[in-house]
Image (cartoon, rainbow, N blue to C red):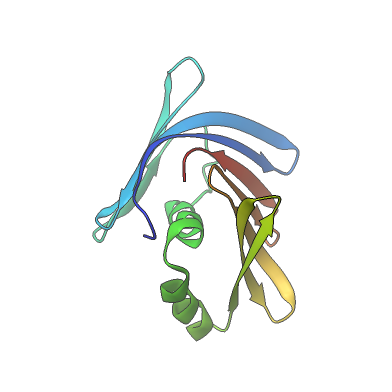
Length: 147
């Protein structure tokens, strides 16, 4: 982890024509990742957990074919140390690039994962928002919180 995360994030996602909005309490540090999902009324929508021993996703609102490992990988691509991930992805034949932009005083980090010249994933991070786009699988989401 580049920095520990412990707080509420608003998730706005899109998969095909479906759009969803929910909140998540996220606690992530060197020991693992835990998320509790809930709607705007506070009703529970499921849980996700990832550590050295197991990864699990229990939720009636996520598609049944969504693998917990994909959620763990997405989170790692967004928040884990770029250089540690770069070596692992390059060993798999993928390109992992990092760009920094300073637009109107807003520091933006852009991460791209590509296979050859084809961009598979693009992530834009600012201090309070992460935009994740998976072009290969056709989904995207935005996380709003304190990063």
